[in-house]
Image (cartoon, rainbow, N blue to C red; front, side, top):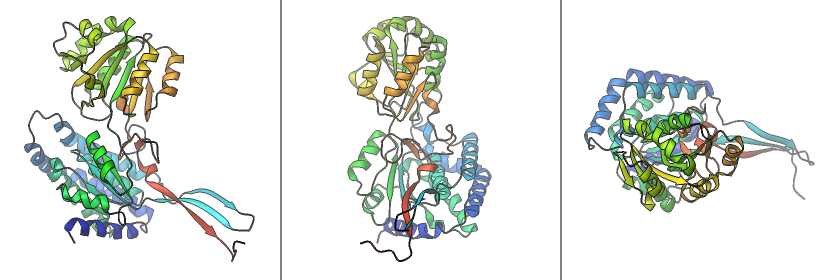
Length: 414
């Protein structure tokens, strides 16, 4: 039996003992974990620097990988927030008595053992572990080699806190970073109840194609913002700049900007100076390219520009004739993550919210709000773009399934 097999088997066994833990103990563990994280800020930063040292300095993914004191404090605060949320398991969803006297209850129960595959974001290690512990699920974590030292340091802290509270530390397991570990995870149907990939579209599709274990997708984002002809242009500039520049390496950042032709010249005159401050590279269609002739960081858009999740300070730009053309473009190019309209026309805003088929849709706000913590859900495992089980921020409330409990007095079916 390989090391990976042993680790997964141990986690599966640990999941049963975790479900017996009192709710008060789980809350205590999470609060202690938050404090322990803050105590270990220097150690976490030191481990993270080892990961960053292996990367090219200009790699745009470095922002996702980097830990600093502020980000680590935010992780601790997020875990405290998760500790305050009610355990989603053990709730009575429905109850009734049948004609024959059988008493039925439908209750929420933990998923069991969750496998998570994710790329170079060490905060995800803490997020997933905290959410799984709060919902009484064990977890098997498969991070990327990019964040190997950071993830080892994180899981070391988690296991220390679990052990101190007499909870089996095997209920949170970090697999080896080698790719071979993934192959057994994909075939461990007896031990893993669901796999959740979080990262690039390539990673998600790879997991979908190869896993025999059920998969819940957390999708890549090709996020759109549409500036409609009746938009408040100053507000539109603020929204677009925020969506593109605040954290360009995350999945809810802006990738494609659509602008009505009738206001394109006036709007782009306002937007381009703001974009230039951040050196945003713009891939513009033919009409927009002419309108931003003096902008220093422009390129002619190619067909693939409108299907790209940039994860950096790059943005596709397209002019559209009207609302219907904007919706048609979004339907063809969206990954169903987050889309926004900026307009003072309430009727069109409501049509946009109703007709755009994405997990999260906005009127007059930045797509950067698509986040479990921002939605008051605590942390998140990812943003689900599929329609089965969960959609949008995949947070604590969705880490359960259902089972029926039937109490009888000797009834038999005739």
